[in-house]
Image (cartoon, rainbow, N blue to C red; front, top):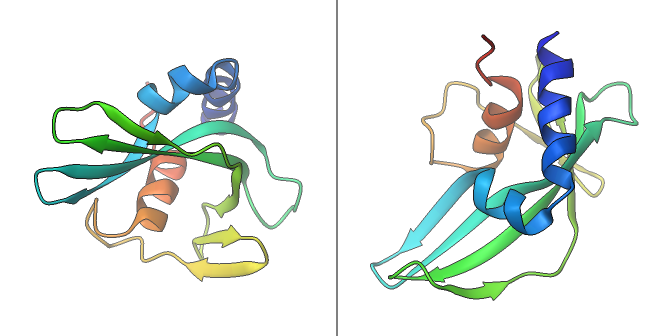
Length: 122
């Protein structure tokens, strides 16, 4: 049920990439007070590889200190996420282990995993 609810949310957000970029931010890195980079979920679906749970497309935005978008990356950055142990994020053909005990904001791969695999369910 949890996975179906999350997939429904991701599919709904996929209808509008620009809205998803603003609504589904999972990680932000700040560079002083003048710049920040935000990563968001632009698309999501069940993983094609049965050893993973989700295939997603990540959008990247750069903001100035006032929140104005300076750069919107047009690339389609694809990743796969495995929720169960060993937790993992796959980018291209490289697998990255996720430290599930890491604190939020420390690593974008952890934050992606947490956004997909630790979403609260009511």
